[in-house]
Structures are given as C-alpha cells and as structure tokens.
Image (tube, rainbow, N blue to C red; front, side, top):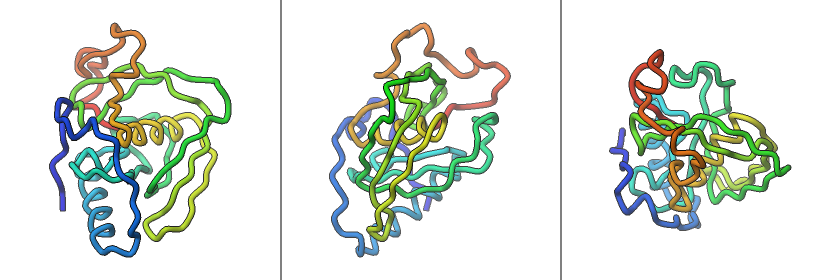
Length: 177
C-alpha cells in the first residue's frame, strides 16, 4: 500500500525514532512492504519510517537505475533496522541531495565519504557493511531521518540550495532521496 509522505514542517519529522524490538510482529513486515511500495511509486532511492509517520528506527534504500540520479551507481535494496553509523575516515564529500519530504528542492550537503553501517534486517539478522560515495550518502541521509534531521539542516552554504527546475533545468520534476 502506498502511504502519504510527510513534508518538511510536519513535527513528526523532527522526532527521534524508537528502536524496533519485535521482529516477529506481522505489522513490521506489512510496514516494510508499504515502504517499498511507497518508495517505488515516487521513484525514490530511500525512505525512512518517520517519513510516513511511523516513529521507528527503520530505513529502506536501494535501486538499480534511478531517473532522478541517472549517474549514481546501483545500491543494493536494503532493509536496515536500528542502524549505527561509523565513519571510516574524516574525509567528507559535498553532493547534491533531495528528499521526498522536501519536494522540488535540492541542496549541496557534506557527508562522510567512507562509512561502516550496521543494524538488523527484517528478521533480526545482523547487517554489517563498509560503503563509500553515493551508497554512504544515501544511508546517512536516511538515518538522519531517524534523528529528526532533514538535509537542509546540514547545508553549509545556502546559496547551494534551491528548486530543482532552477538549479538543474535539464532534470525533470521533483527531487527525492
């Protein structure tokens, strides 16, 4: 089922999400299925549970090809629950980001270039990966949602924030994650 996506200004996007504790609950599987339906319907590359009003530490991400990020390498479809992020170096990289909760806008955001993330999958099995570049960016963006952070908060130079159709007239429609 496709769920409505909350937009910037909704106070539910500013909460700190609660950990998932019951991996056997059928409602968790239904929530994950709804999140994938929602993300695919809007051609997103990631979605956090708080973006659909569910205050749990659950993010999904991944794609093969994405029209909104045509130059981005594929990222494996992942369900990440109760995530923990650790930078593998202090090197950061600026990159353009959008968000399903901040439609139509993009901004230049610094993120760690090399990242280790871990957490659980939908069955409570441990996930542990070292990633870089766009994959690392997507994970950081999604996990920020679990801490009540929207990407505009991380922009260092507000002259590098604006509407997609103005910044990138060659791209179509809204920005996303």
